[in-house]
Amino acid sequence: MDSVIRLTDVKVEREHFILGPLQMEIPRGYITAIVGPNGSGKSSTFELVLRISRPDSGRIERFGETVGDDASEIAFKQRIGYLPEEANREESWMTGTDKADFIKFWYPTWNVNRYSDLIRIFEVDPKLKLSKMSKGMRRKFDLAVVLAHNPEMLLLDEPSSGLDPISWKRMIDIFQKYMEAENRTILIATHIIDEVKRLADYIIFMAGGRILGTYEKDELLGSWRAFFIREQDLVGHSGLQELPGFEKSGAMGGGFIRVVSSKASLAEQWLLGAGIAVSGQNPLELDDILEVLIETKTDY
Image (cartoon, rainbow, N blue to C red; front, side):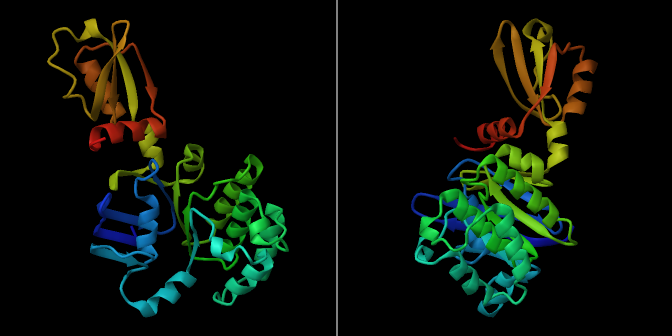
């Protein structure tokens, strides 16, 4: 699979936080979501890709080129649209129109009609000073600017922050239409589970500066399941650690044990073959899966 971004053994060491070593590949033509709690390293990873910060070790490749050549930075950034988590306060004195006029100077592919359409769809008044815009309106304006030059790739850090439900739905629709063009890619950092379910093809779970796993979304949601078993039905069996995809187990009370497997079909067959009756089962949601991964793969 062709990768637009590849991180190999990338590590950043700070006094109170260590990021990595990271192994990450972002496939071209898909939407990849980085999901994790606050402080997990999502924004720091974006800053490394954008060369806002530098790693202490490791290699970063973008569009097949190794990061390190200053001359390639402008060319790279003209191919992407980057939305940071927080709006730039130093721009507060500008109106929306001022910022758009400044930004379009740097992008040969700036499309004034596209910009106007997005401003209309998001119902933004670009004549307002950025400091006078509400958080939601500023977010919508910045989204319009990011998309107006038809970038090849979007890097979006918590893009829905501050958006009302109607604007959120419009944003989702815009991203889905954006992906209809050939070889478009989105890398999104978010904690909104419904956003991930609606958009993502691939999911990268992060916590504590580490990558806990990379998964194809539909396969992930279809393969993680919790099984409910009566304790009395386990009498005479050596244990559940041999269960395919075993992740964790715990007593629920009432004589039941909850067992989580990341290989649901194989686990169900194993339980049947072992003569262990399943009293019930249910698929895990993304936040449940993340909770299990944090519990079993970190020192939290």
